[in-house]
Length: 277
Length: 190
Image (cartoon, rainbow over all chains, first blue to last red; front, top):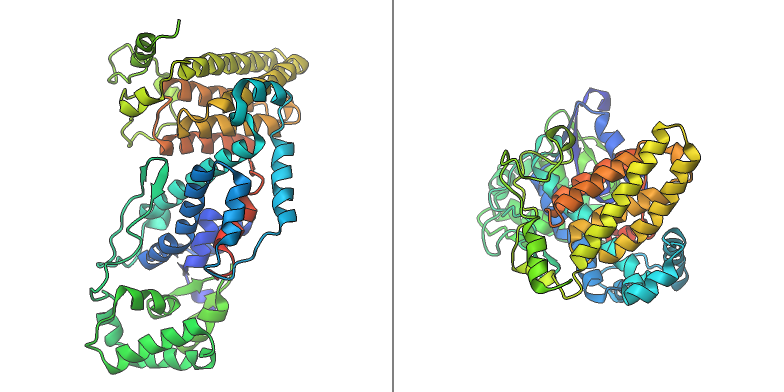
């Protein structure tokens, strides 16, 4: 595959997430990777996944900070979530983070402030509020950029209800995050017309069947191949996930992703390039 | 004297007037580069939410007093820099950090206030000597003037103001942001 001839970067959700939410240098790597190409292309599917996953996690943290008004309690709450095998901060790491904040935001007049303003001057409460504002800024700035970033979204999904965020009583409301249930996915017709490609992608997934996510993806692809009239639901579309970027990658584009492990085998099966920033 | 009537009168003076009425306290057009022109302003609208925030202690009027003090300090700092008096400029800059830290105590008034004041304080604290960032006093002054003119501006507008501050004083990393982001997004997403 002669990647040098590719002019466009097809931005996958992990790279979009780094670009929009990270501040540890990953965002610069993502930007630099996209800028190596003439054009960055962000499909609406990536925005959909972004809202359903990373943005939702940020909104959850924002709302938890608003509720607890404590940075430390919020981190403890986060640690108790066992939804997925995330990396957990140790108590020492949490304390180190908070100490760094206290050192940075330690005004000379803290004692006076605490006398005059009580809990409002408590370092944990200040840290919680400032973190909440920082998250809120990241949430709004990223989601509001979807209509303009790199020329706006590519390949609009007719079944996806793109909606702005809203606020009520200090909480950010993010729903709807997904397509309505029990309706036919708008991608299905295009997929049914490309059964040979679907077969190649499914074959590439065969070595991954020990992973639940890949196995589920393979099942859905097989169903579309064998039973093209059966319903492809919103849930099926979610599980189809990474295969979208392979099946709908534009000509002259390379897929930019940090998830090469999942995407590269499928992309190779169709002769599409995949790169990490 | 702080009475409910005084509070309402105080708020009324912050209702945004139509462009060209001649009575608006906004900055000259050339100085309004903070504002995205294609976005309608909701600044200073007197509504139930605002009235709810007015308490007997008139927090808003205390905020205005402190913000005005900080703006004065930024002006004095700018002037000292123009007069090639870096020691005086730095001294005023140090004093302004104390004012900004107290302004942070009014962050509950609105998220726009909280965000702008927080970034002003963070930017001012990040500077070791004011001569390292001579544009900062003017940038912070403009940011504070905007929030003083429209304390209940849209949050998105506050984000634009903060982006301008970070252009001058970048990077402004909040301790814990990277750790929290990694924890939230994590490897499970990868």
